[in-house]
Length: 186
Image (cartoon, rainbow, N blue to C red; front, side):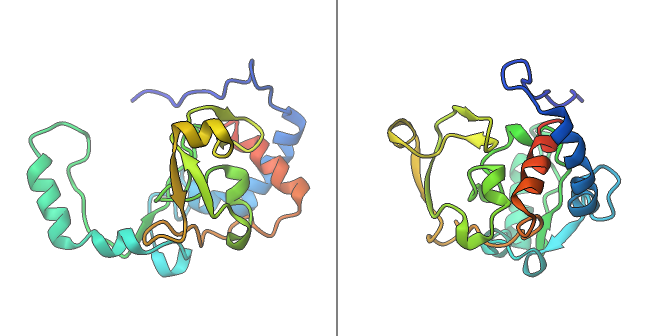
């Protein structure tokens, strides 16, 4: 297995002092679900507990998982044991800076947006423009070029909801800044 890509700090410098204070915030707010060895890392978190859009949970039935496994078992994708669950797997955040947009359905364009209460997250944005936004940690998702290159993502559409995952949303802005800076180092 290849190691995750390192954040391009030579091009987008990381404030190491801020990142250091962000580590303590990560350990307190995020590690139980998203750090290697965390109590919930790799575990299914019920959709009703995490509060994210449940559409994918509902559509990924036992029959759908079995059909998918049967169809693709001959290929070596590294995924061969899909199953239906009542939630989403809590994953480690290594190289999280590369994985925008966020949540299981890509409904939150940047980490900074994810740390906002759902009612303050973008309602419409453009996905598909691959210009990195180092301040917000995601891809540029607004503006004429994002609109020209990307496709319109509207969180009011079924399955596109950006609600839930409230961890970190109540932090003071300075703590959010520190947490984001630390997340760049993962």
